[in-house]
Length: 428
Image (cartoon, rainbow, N blue to C red):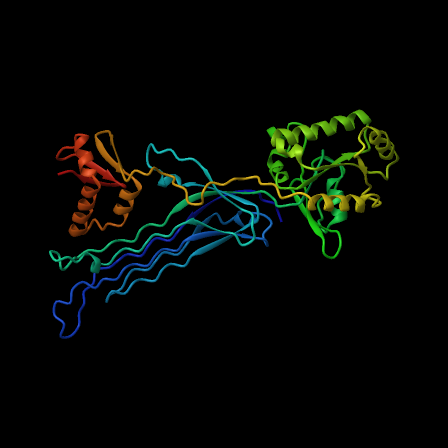
């Protein structure tokens, strides 16, 4: 299965059902009055952190997710059925970024991508898009002066957003090192993971996870981070795609190919440390176990003896013979137990305002008076403009909000065009 660690999708909550115009008609009950039911609420969209998922590959071919819309109201004051909520499972460690869809952004409006949350706990649930409320039936618009209202509200549209999901693997231990240092070989020896292994650089093209079992009750997750070379944090090789996965680990195991000249080994250690620090300086404070690999080769054993005099903390292993591997895994396990899980994201509040708090805004564009704002647009979306009574109510609500007063301040005149949520009106 191909590893996918970033994907863009769209989510759309269900729209509310329309309220209806209906009348009470019963035998022996004259002048029954309005009895139109309300529409049902649209379904919400939730994201749920699921331990069973390890990648975002499920989003590779399905990028659009929509909840069910509410049903229209019925006669005899019967409300419509609400739409079913949509639950979208995502892997643990998913960062969720949100912004409006391009078609929902008003002309001249600037919005930016915002971090909503970090779904890192099993079963953690996020309401990402709210369903629209159902429209009111004509029963709600009866007054002493208007006893037979012949209009009802349309359902409110559900929220629609573009999401970017970014996966940061939740592993306890990260294997780092230059290509062909023996990371994949070690992972295959200590876990059931079966990464591709070959004697050429960049054999591993995606992070590999494996579970290392210490005994019947103790285990930890190890990840092989591929593609680290000089300049990786700037995009060289594959490192900038995968360095993010190191941030969540509690301990790093830095593997060094022992079948090299001493000066080359020293330079390679410096390269990896520089790349970690350039990506995130906090990584240099993380516990790191420095390990020389391939001790089954005489040259590597010789280099290990030379370097240990300079680096007392240095360990040596041979994945081929198993020498030093168990001791290394035990050291990793004890180090993990003494370290809390790093905090790598401080998300904004879950419900963010992508637009301003003002109820409306009026701008003049090429002689057209454009009224915008979330409240105004929602009111327009729920108004049946084919009904004269509904249009009259729409104008009344706008007047109470102060829209007409603002239009007059900007010099509106009879015959001027006023545009609200894509609908154009002639001012009178």
